[in-house]
Length: 468
Ligand SMILES: *Cc1c(COP(=O)(O)O)cnc(C)c1O
Image (cartoon, rainbow, N blue to C red; front, side, top):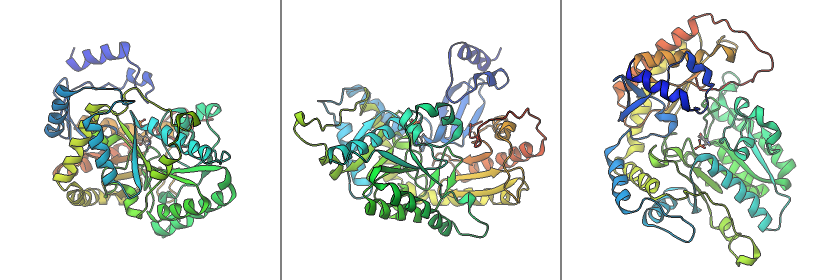
């Protein structure tokens, strides 16, 4: 038995993996990873895989990056952890100062949690609580876009709209207001992203006009709806949304958990619209993909509504045990150093252009409806019928065939339903991008050639985005 097989067996005897139908692993081998270096992951049998999705969008400077490693090692010898209520430490102060300086104007306070979903919970609770503290308790509801994803905890699911992840739990969810997404994949033929995004804003305007007195906040994923299939829209939407939120006295929450830290071509997506949200949620690449941590930045105005004598009970009494963990802060500080020292955002422009040129031919593929890109995120939408953009039945799991082909070729490409995408570490080389494009093309050929027979079950999710 190979080493891979033996680790796989031991794993499958005791683990329950995330976002997985475990029965799949009767056919689909699990890949135990022994080590990582740069863009490469290596399994126990010595096979290497190019990490095209940055290990679920977190790893921006490669695996086992020497600079991040060193910073964590140094911190480890100094202080591994201390509770953040009543206590503080050097890395958390330095990181907070740097995040405040780096993010758009007005974001002056940083609250930490230990993953993206709980960061969203914090933003939702703070917004709701702000309106109570400000004598406007009717403002309780949240406005969200169709096809959005904001995490897995119950309130975060409530503001999400990817049926596969949320339908089962509907009875548990908050009652939110859903507005049609500006998703430019759905734009009328010949219309620009900008015009479509602007037109779609009419729905948001109308919802806010009707409901603003009961609305606490609008939450969006700026520019890219990630888990919803890497669907993209124009920054004009964010600009119009900021103006409307001001007009209607509604908070604006930007979930930049996936798109923050350079993914869209600027450090933060909101820069492209020239706006500051009331809450900016960051996680994923914040620690360079090393340790779980999220940061919620907000304004002094928000903060002041909670600042009072203890007995008024206005305080935000929310905590997570590992809040502000020093090792995670050290990883984040090292990550920010690399951004600053290596002029990463500028250097990424050439890589993004290479991603575009390497995949341009796929636009002519008979089963590709669109190749779309925003900065360092590129997505290829496979469809059954190109002219009508008819999707493949989700049960056919065409993306899974791309995934399996890529593994054979030594790449980790994990599609979202029928959407194949690249979200690589910024340390990828132009030649490695060409390799990924080649593997993706082959995989798409294989996946779209085959007739797939499946028993179609009624009542299944309409938008299937199970990765794999
Ligand atoms: C991943 C993600 C989350 C949830 O973060 P977790 O750390 O997985 O809980 C929330 N919002 C967006 C946009 C994400 O991509």
